[in-house]
Length: 149
View 1: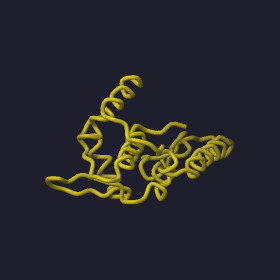
View 2 (view 1 turned 90 degrees about the vertical axis):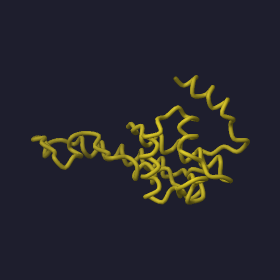
View 3 (view 1 turned 135 degrees about the vertical axis):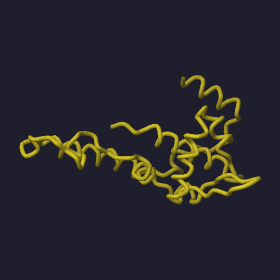
View 4 (view 1 turned 60 degrees about the vertical axis):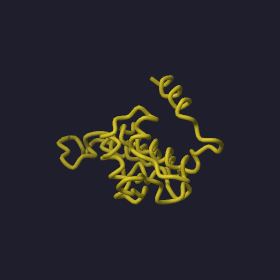
């Protein structure tokens, strides 16, 4: 199973906001911290805001913050709301044109695997992936991002 970049960025954004609960964060600073394009993060911000995972404040001095406590943000729910679909194979699609569906057991196996994948994430919240300690500096985040490239 594979998650899209959209979900990866959503998790990064939520984690960044959880690390900085005492202030509003901006798209610009999150984009800079992760070396992600601001327009891409704007789309994710809009979606997370509409889904009530984050709260946004417009205008000068505005920004965003978590709308819920990290313990209340289930990772599986984030995935299910952010991912565009879980069409792992054609038979999951509504416009399925496979003509051997009546003889194929792949759909059931793939659904079982998908259910297990989601069930694993359902056991964890944002708080579970948020390690305690001092938030990383911009400099240390830069080193981490460069290492991951």
